[in-house]
View 1 (cartoon, rainbow, N blue to C red):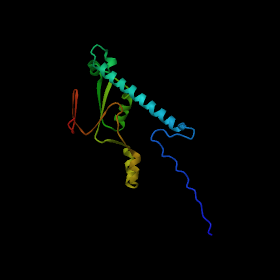
View 2: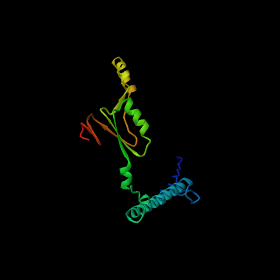
View 3: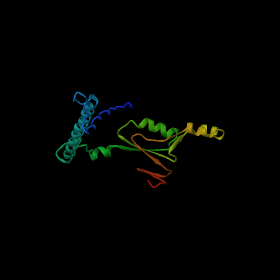
View 4: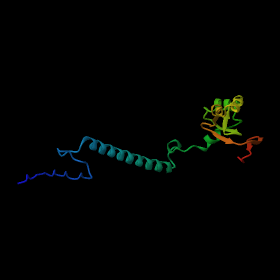
Length: 166
């Protein structure tokens, strides 16, 4: 007689449910509960921000609410800002910009024929080492103001004309 082999097939665990998975004790693991709590908190914060957005839109439409609460800027304040135009984005122009940029009563415009600053004495080294150009140039930006790239064609009282038409 030949020996018979008995095999036992292990039981297959049930498929996990799409909701929070349960442990052997019947409770959801801590990670799943904390994830659900974070998800709920995000939903509550989103709802609060949506309500505040709607409320601010309603307040901005009311004519009797002071301008500061509506976020409106009064036309008198816009007209009192002095316009300053700095022509040239080299050492002198950037020094003037640095001195004036912290003043909130000024509307500053920098006009330069290039959109970058360059340390001109260092250009000669670029003939022998072209990668040196990266260390002697940087892009121009006007924090709180405006940069116009172009050449000035005329300066009149209250108006500066650039070859780009601005």
